Length: 244
Image 1: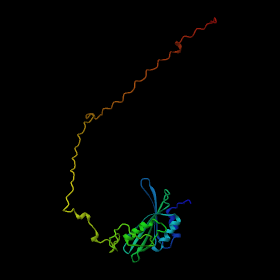
Image 2: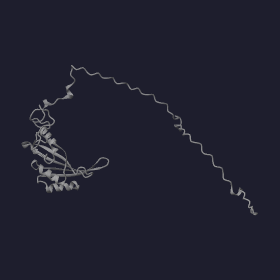
Image 3: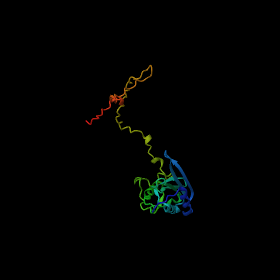
Image 4: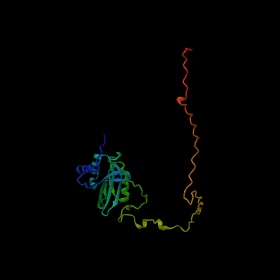
């Protein structure tokens, strides 16, 4: 099946027409990047946790997306998840970035998994569970990824409220100093750099004229060929009229 690339504006129209009614704040932007002025097209939109799967299915109907990552931020009353993906991936000059923003209220921090549509999403969904405290309903593998097994339960490093990292959990390495009972490691002294004396200039300081370099010796020119005799100087042959 041949993939027919669409512009960001065309994709935005299809998403609003065929997607769930909760899709809103749709915005498209196209700009150029780099010295070669490479065109970059992006779409931003917002939807609800309940319509996340339906929104993604609408994207898949256009072109199966390449999911980059799901990022997240604590916005106060909600945790906003941002699903970053790209359609028409691999078609040079036709890729379009799509970011689906899903605000998840802290009163009900639950969002459905998208791993049944994009299996690779499990990795980034697991990260959001342990870092932001979002419950991903239906996730096939709910294990943590980065935090140690003895990490306090109910503490989420990316949260900015009372469930985030407390001050006593922060190790200010910059202020800890060096232990007094540990000797300082030996440090090799730096070698002093000696500047080389300047070489005498080869140009004439009075005239500021440089002596031209000698041109490489060339082979001697071949001797000129002897001049051909003038036709007037050549005697005519004698004709024997006696038949001899």
